[in-house]
Image (tube, rainbow over all chains, first blue to last red; front, side, top):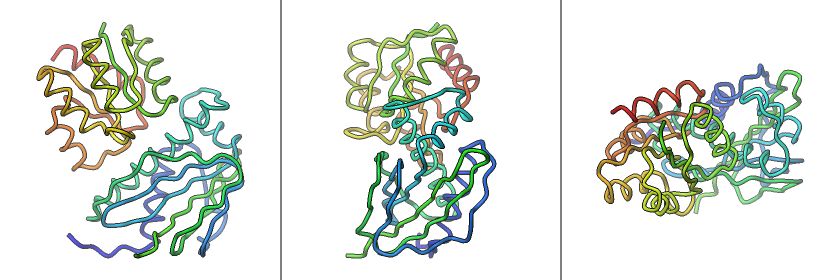
Length: 153
Length: 120
């Protein structure tokens, strides 16, 4: 089955997934921004590769304090160090898994990779173009949702 | 009370599952970080129930279900995955999984499913 899907459809699926998985109220800071060539995360994040009828990478990044607040809101636990990093990977897995289910309902068959956790300032390059939406989480800082479309060979 | 093997590549999720399951009176006999380890641990510990993630490195959860069920056609395996789309659930059921829970999950749902599988 072949279905045309836009970057905004993917970003919408990812945003819906973030809102479903994370039990904090949130709102976009501003309209989605286009990203060209590279993206730099400031502190901590997770990258999930999407493969199949749609190819690209989904990144969620935020400060350690924001991810810790999300863990507290979801599971009532305070996490730090390696367990926080593991949680960040799992958040990526849950958000990407939920987004993939939404895309599946639109007729797009894709699969996801295990999460890659990114710690510290990290530059991500090698993608065709991307869209970036910063979200404000209630009393918990900012989380960035970035979708990067893979370069075509 | 069930003897349970917990399989997930995320240390955080293994910790949460262990906490939930032990609070429900169950025993965690082993943990696995990927499907290959789960197959090995199943052979060593013969647990009553296996919880199984899907997206994992080395060997994914669907392959692990097939491998475990090939060794033991009566194995009771509960999928605990972030991948809840219909085709993934169907693949897991065809491979031999007896239940499917989509992350994020709550403790009541997990414990109810464990009880259901234990009594099945």
